[in-house]
Image (cartoon, rainbow, N blue to C red):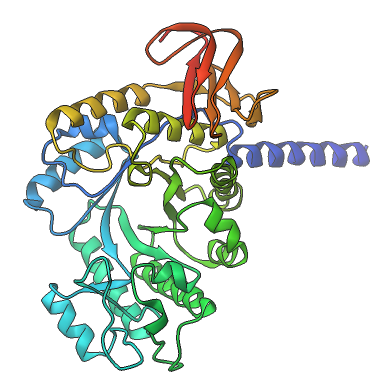
Length: 416
């Protein structure tokens, strides 16, 4: 009798463990599209519009007028309690026009120099100067600054750390004369391992200071880079205290299917090895129009969203790049807003399988309760015969579709 009871207890705990792990990984998650947007004060949008369009945003300080911004964001939180607002900070650089910080950095010898003892500045942003992120005093000072911001502006949920993750010198100093930048502790050029350890220490200081507030870091860029430096990236994902990653080059018009596939596999790796370990973590793959100048905006947006849906397992992936910045004219912005609203209304339900290739093509697809997504990352156009009639975002019925290169579609079982 005792043996039977023991077996029953084991089976019950095994079931609970299995169910819990499925839930953490996201296999029971209703797939929905969530949106991250870049630096803005939202002066042109009401709280209702912000809550309707976005799930996370970053803003640079000072936001003027702060009182209006604070009041509006408080309204956003009431409408959408899970909304996250972040404060922007470039943790790799100091700016020469930030007089107070500039004087402190000079007095403490925190700015990096070349072999001749001259300060090094960004080739792309001449007002940016490289700071010694490996210096413990700079790390503590920066952590105190960020905590002070969050203490003063309590409605912010955390920090967006630009240039926030790097594991090798070429990526860290992408806009600097890297061969000339000297590590003051060794007297030689920086090494990859030194960069990795400096970021780990810097993240630790920041998180120890800001506590439960979020630290979302910009870095990695895309899947090819991630897998090329897999050992180092795996180490920082496993050991850093950051709460999320934004990668600016994930979705673009890749020159090859293999490049696109690396980014898809990177997204899935982050889900399986980073997000599932903590339910307060986030990943933001960016649809980057600057890397895809010859593709229509709506096509690129749909390509990136559909590509993300191929790999999504959790509700903690937010797509970046949609309405990334203000358009040159109001008509273009209103058009993008309209398309963004259409995407926000997409309900796919639970995924029925992982992504797979459509037979005889290099086109990828995935099935959901309410429809399917199809993506063509190849440089060849394909005509696809569907297994039955589906409906497009616009409500058009079709049983066959032509997918041009770098094109993705979202299809539904019923008209929307």
